[in-house]
Length: 180
Ligand code: PRP
Image (tube, rainbow, N blue to C red):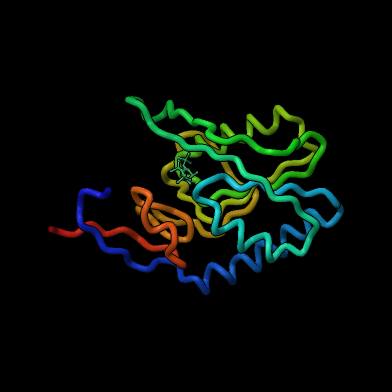
């Protein structure tokens, strides 16, 4: 449970997100137009809303799979651990893979996931993140496609949580802490 009172200010509307997803889907379709075996991998839990909207715009033969990961800092922020809670159901060897993430922050999660998946020898692997906070990066990582670059704000909604709440907001909001 959050300990401090807060309000949520709208930052990116549902309409803006939908319009951006249409643009991104066009690029993705063009990039993978030659494949009949695209595996779209959502990183749980944060990507569940984004992947649902994205795959419905793709109009490509896709399989959908999920990897559940969570990252948490230890005493030294730069050596974050990324834990796999649930692995993929399917094989990715020789497949074309699109990894779908809600947000890239320090970069540890996607760096770790890409090392893990590349070791399984996919034919091709690309990444898409709805949000990117480049100013927070601790390890260099650039997704193939990014929806929106945002400043270092605490964001929630459209899959992203604060203390497991607010994932169901249809827009991206900024958390503003208020006095009790
Ligand atoms: C969040 C977010 C990304 C990751 C990004 O996940 O969904 O997966 O952190 O941060 P990074 O670039 O600093 O690694 P979290 O571990 O909170 O799990 P969740 O997706 O289940 O909310």
